Length: 128
Image (cartoon, rainbow, N blue to C red; front, side):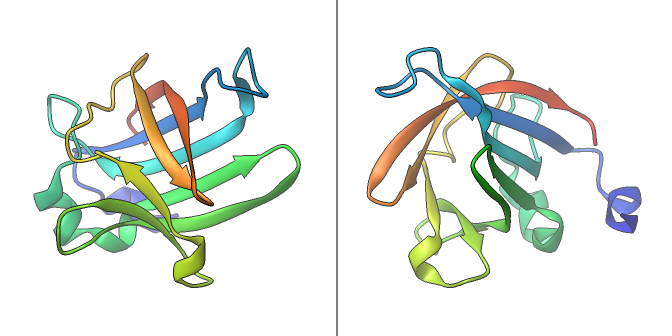
């Protein structure tokens, strides 16, 4: 993809995998997200770089039992981050306190999906 050649150096590929939860006592490496997002040196989402390069901030949701979904990282006027899938507002997934979270390997973040919050562990953060 040519977009990757023009990405600012702040961009990182972030892999999230489902952490332990009811129904998945060991977590699940086959359920998660791949984010292509700009991060600060502290590992937080860089809102300034994001604003200039919104179209490059992509998200892929993967599940072993369904087709991958592709979306974009978006931000509501109040500052809340969410994943916007193409189909409409009903399929948006909210990042819980994404503006405050550090996206570094081993940390945990939560994403709201279908009226339920799920926790994911950051499996890796690397340059695209």
